[in-house]
Image (cartoon, rainbow, N blue to C red; front, side, top):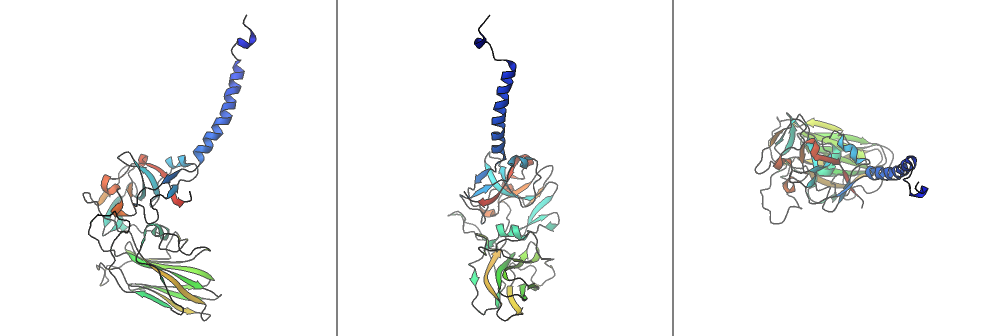
Length: 338
């Protein structure tokens, strides 16, 4: 008979050891897998909202993205055909036929209209913001040619600049007394009027976008009125207040110039209680077909069309085609703090 200490531990002791290990390891592993993942932005293809060195993050429990159905305009970390990872925006969904027509995205026969919150991420500024002086109640800009120049384009690259018809403005209207201030936005032949009844800073945004005239006004929260790198004020909403198709019957329907724009402070209940502050001009992203590729894609099966927000600096589905669902790894948002 062997001494008791030399014998193998009882089976129940082994089970206890395994249970203790599981109780320690599994919560730690679960906590690590639940934490958001972070990725560093490399390149300018998702500008102007994201720049090299920025961090983007998934939500909590990032493994759930495996079962999430990608939505239009979501940003995803994707597996590229060359084996690397990239950050792109999903613009075409399974079952659709997506095309680039005159710089706009079309799904089937309809242009894909960006909501204000997405425009805030992809629109580029046209010149610096202008601050109106005391007593100025009218801002205007005549119909003007705007080109798709890119300040972050690589040095030494030469290309022909194309006109951008989709453009508009974003302004801040300060209301300092309880009452009613009426403001009017002008986009080409269209006008939209709002009654601003709350004290505070109101954003007013209007323009031509994706075959429509669009307009929205909202109350800007405390803090910086302008949302960092965006040319729209902070807290852009998910929907436009006004969307109307841009009629093809207009005399200038085929003009390549951006529409005339204007913002007027029409009237106030209390004299001097409202004023126009800063006004910025924006232009929409102009999608271009790839140099050696097509401009129309049929998204069969689980295929998704993934594009960059700056077509000139992005290598995306225009070059290598749609991506299968398995190539879409994680939804991300950002930039986030280090």
